[in-house]
Image (tube, rainbow, N blue to C red; front, side, top):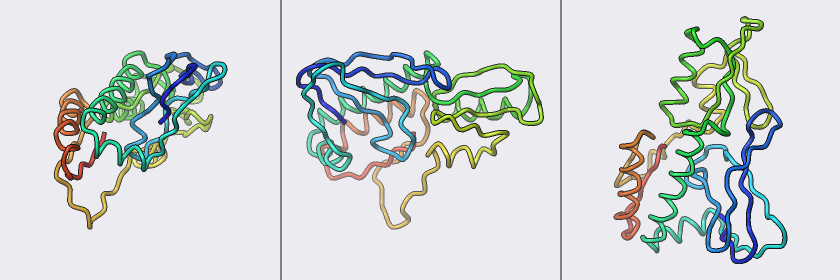
Length: 201
């Protein structure tokens, strides 16, 4: 995570295979962060400084320590990262591109998978070469042709295997409105204690 002291950070995502889409300009006292800081999912956005800037760099381990120690800050960070992800989903920016025929079963299954997991995606209708459709175009320009759900989940970092030796006080499963609200409120209350929280968003 980067906290801006001076200057600004431009946040962008890929609208197509090579087309950048501007999302937000972050200015002093704001920060860049995504939910991938709390799980193993691929990052959905990129960022770069716009001119000379002074930033504070906070590593993943430092951020986790900060969120355990400061409940108010943890609540603010979680809300910001969740709303940023919801914005990507709502505006259909970034994430992956699903290509195929919307009336086909395989296409509908993949689209349902993205919706259920709250994973930002764009759709592109195509009737070319149905033998390789539907396809999923990833942010790194790789194309998965007729991917299995399990394979796709692994590639996107959605699949998570909890440590069987760990004990969790709260587990939030799902990325719908109820799941996101539960995650925010659980974070607000439990990070002020020594509770261990698992997020599976």
